[in-house]
Image 1 (tube, helix red, strand yellow):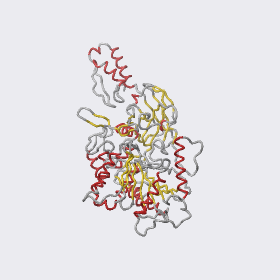
Image 2: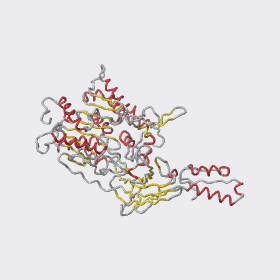
Image 3: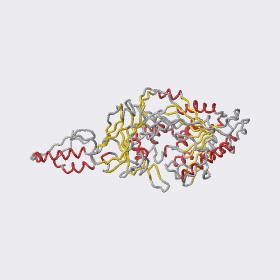
Image 4: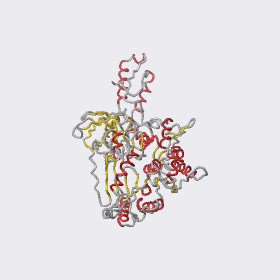
Length: 599
């Protein structure tokens, strides 16, 4: 046992093995494999020397900190499947689970999968556990830390098609492992960690459920079970909507309204405040409260066109939203939204229910979703405003060309390779690379189960693998790109490629409907893809290439993520764009349509 490696050799073991290299021959040096030491005759001349050598080697090889984690029967009486994450923080105040972030200020995490872990049994997080930013517990410097454990609970799904997969089911938090109701966690505790410290951690706490939202005069809620998604996932699946209704909605029961679907990550609600900001609010909190209260004042005053504005809740077992389309890994969310949820919203809240009176808008992931839904359902929606969208052309998937680059993590030359950034600050400093970003996600969850952005791209754009989990475009360890999966991405979800391939069919239904904004210094390098889409859209004006798309692309000079147009300071997105949508609808409405009663 003493001569068994619990993990790869590192800087703590190298000095000892190198010093005795003259009398040792390593047969196996791989993780979790026994190895033997064949000592030379000179070493056998002294039994004491041999014994001392064995003790030194054994002590050095096993000297690494570890965490022994369990959960109490009071927290959960049944066995648990999931991802066990131990957070090790140098911030001695607060909860470490909320101190994991992108960039240099993130705290340390280690992760292992657990399957059928019983209450009271111990899961060992040691040198075999994946880590980020440090790869191994062996690399933890001795010192005082604030530690906490979280178990992100997995549910077993028996999916249509025969695959059985274990994933985290969203419980209203939007796929957040550190705040998901039902997840188990320990209380933070400060510990001194040395070279061989064993840290016992017991998870005694359960993250509580989220209180159901309450309707107000202006904000209403709707939740339905989706038959389409239930059939795909093999268990009841629900979709939700948060609906902002106009002034006079309850009084004017015969009035019908145009509708704007606002696409974003999993929304908790509108930035809509029905009471004035308090004097105690300062700085950014005060500015946000002022904007939210101004939104309420404009909305309730009757000065704005009378609209329904809808936030959609459609978290999946992979991510905080579905990207609004049908996919191999997440199921028929595009159809579920357009055939089940949206019609239910329009019926209950008295929408006009015609394409000309139905638009989409949203930013970032919501920007991509907005454009994708308009493109994949061209006659259902009457217009789309996609702000700072996720990559709309995979020739410029941030800084990676997925079709020609062989590696997602590095620009590679004959003798040099340079890491590929994935995020920049306004001062052009890099705050993360694609490798670092992906590695953090792989610690939070294997098989694409982190709930993070890169795993969401794989789950959305890629096929399912043979085991039913996501087939990833690039190898999470090496970054090597699979060209077959790249072809799948292009054929199914490269929006520019889709427009180029199918413009003869799509073009007549998209005239005037596509509107895009993008900062020229987007934080996540999303601007290059928009330029490529714009090049194609502009080409539709050439002879024989039409019909001309007739939409708009607007750039914000040196603006970061997420540029949504030149909105006056302090004004909300909805207050600015609802009049834009109203004017657009007035022009697009068919002859005889009611374009006055709601204005």
